Length: 119
Image (tube, rainbow, N blue to C red; front, side, top):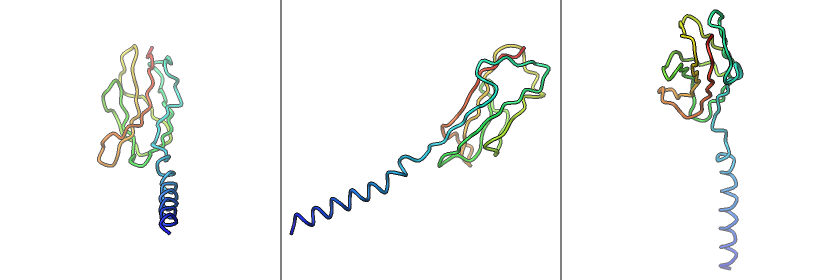
């Protein structure tokens, strides 16, 4: 009789852990900058559009947008575009990052960055 109970306990544990597996495999979130491509050259006289797509993951709420490490904007749109306008960007290389944040504005990890050359 004891071996049947042990077997039943084993099956219960196995089936319970199998139910938890999908939670472990859940998407953690991602941020992708679709355009421009990393290393692209942008004209300083144009309105330069950054196109992005984000999956918030379990803790994500909105995006923080950084230019050269400095927070320049926030958006709750998880898919869309952002214009680099009225920033008087100096010529040269710049790094633009979209970083996922939670409701308390704490970064949650997922981010996408591109380096652009302003000419």
